[in-house]
Structures are given as C-alpha cells and as structure tokens.
Length: 70
Image (cartoon, rainbow, N blue to C red):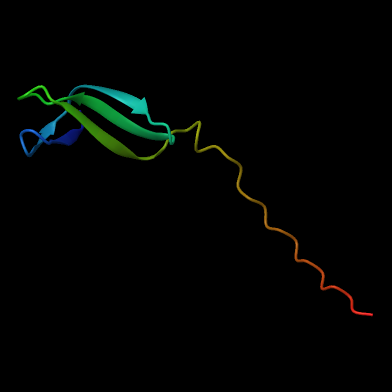
C-alpha cells in the first residue's frame, strides 16, 4: 500500500483500506484511513488516468500564406 501524510498524527504512515479513485480533473488518487487514528488520508498519484490521457496529439498547423498587397 502507498504511504501518505496523516494530518492528525503529523507523520507519514501507510494508507489502510486504500481505494483508487479518479478525481474530476482526471487524475488518479488513493483514499484510505490512517492505521493509528482512523482519519481519512488522501494521496494524489502522478499522471492522469488512461481514459483521460488518450486525446490525440495535435497536428502541426500549415504555415499561413502572406497576404498579397495590390
């Protein structure tokens, strides 16, 4: 299990009963409890989820032609 920071104990501890969630912005996180005091712990994981990170890469735009002056 991942390690997170318990605000109540003011120490890094292992997250118990951790469940992986996806936040509104598409990032993954783990939510669980502190093994000592039972306070809810939340840790944001790196990267976005596979479904949210699948947009196609932008194609380079063609250079614009200079306007002709008459």
